[in-house]
Length: 193
Image (cartoon, rainbow, N blue to C red):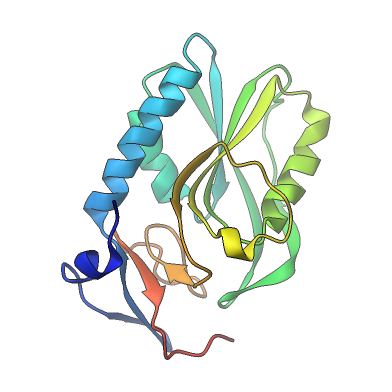
């Protein structure tokens, strides 16, 4: 199983804008888990055409790697929603880019980078309820169980993590850090905004 202290020896601390981050999940750990998620999703949806709905911007790296591991027929769509400013959720969700086609009768898999308060997912599920999809499930790379304020049924979880701010592998801090191939966690002595 994942051991943060062992993983931390592979990569060093980084600076993004005014914050310091320490290693948390390595590329190898991420890819290993994504391979198993892809196999599980492929088995669960065997014989059913799947529509993967990636939540931008954060899920782009995770979704790209995940769909390569899904071995059944599937289509891919994108939606963009936002609820973060700096290192904290704003408590409000704004839909920035909507769906381009109907989801009626489709098996939908929402792919998200992180579920912490659950607000964004609750908003997205409520807005998709009128679409008459055959089913809607959620796959999130990261989940913060301690931070959940809104109940969300997550069918596929990559990693449960503590209530700490993370960056890298698609996740950002004020727009920076998405291009880092690993996941880093805010250094303990840093103050969040």
